[in-house]
Image 1: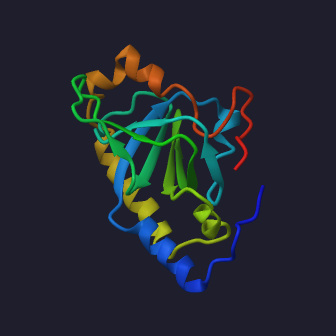
Image 2: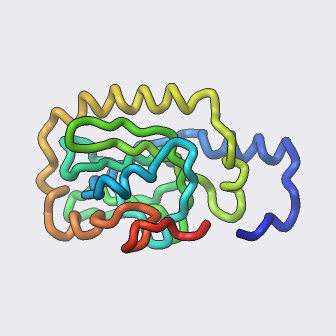
Image 3: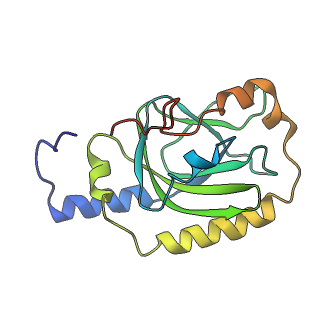
Length: 179
């Protein structure tokens, strides 16, 4: 892991934090995740997904045993979206921080914050915002309502399920990609 070229000032760090939490949207990705891999996603973990991260802004019933919930202000939205997936994605190499998780019988919700690339994610190492806990609680309360709705048929289509089948940030052996 390389060190940043220059050390950031406290003002720069504060600006990065403010920009990361500003105007967040919620996106979800339902994925079948084995229990041993799921257990690795603990609050505070920062990881990199080397591929594109497909997600949707359409939130209804859950289609897999895990739901990755992504708070982000820089997901990209596909327009037009003829399959009506609500397709959004995070770029290759995106970095995420686990804010929290909610485990229940048969599954989990893993709540993530989409961090800015470059070396800006380093600002979040060991940093917990005072709003993180409230964000996780609000998210869990909201999902408790939303997941009672039926699954959107488009989000169980083979093509969509294939685009979301891999757990985020890990290789085929369940090892996290290098930051």
